[in-house]
Length: 304
Image (tube, rainbow, N blue to C red):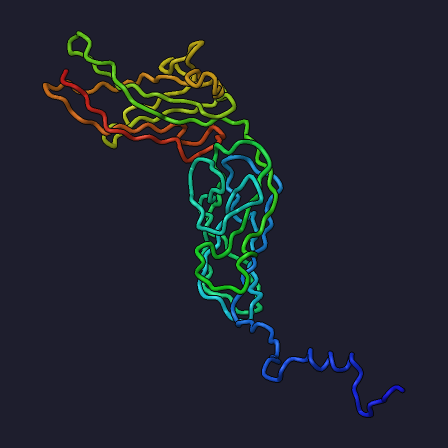
């Protein structure tokens, strides 16, 4: 005969009760609290193409949005040229020569503050010049916001905005004065010691003949000669002629020595002179870089 126990619980119900945690073990799962902090996010527009050495100026447009709920204090914004999309959120280093993740010349701006939820256009005050020796190719121009980590943000991984830009090499000359020399102390009455100036063309195009471009020469602040680049005072040979375009395989080919009319005064002791040469001082030639035409150096002239 089977016995039936009244009030007995089924086995599955007993097991379920045994599996329940004690009241002390039941905890409420809470979501992490989001702190009210700024969140700076840049955006950028730039020209699709540019020439190495070009000043982009205000052809770039940059905005910064604060997607956080709190205002951000002063922060910086860098304009950086990179060969790839991996741009570090650090202060970029400026260099007149191209290097990876280089800061454009004049490419750092400071924003005093930005309210939470606000978006503002960044005023660009610099010339934003691309290094003149940048190789031709495809690049990214990056706007890097708060590279110095001055602002504590809710998201530190959205501080870089990119736009694609193709860099080309300009087919124009680039005149530079690179040095001085003198003819020594040949015999004569009086012994002559003439000032010489060395000029190079470092651009990928030849200097046009008949341009009227000159080299001005100064000694101790006084102009002592102005030499026509097409004149007989400028070395023009098969191997050395400033009219040739720059050739990396033969960099001395586009180089000329200019014999000036200035003769250093005779002196029984050596004398130091401050010499300056300025190529194309009136900008008659369109050049790759118009800011590197002047060169100054102190020359010690021996007794003669």
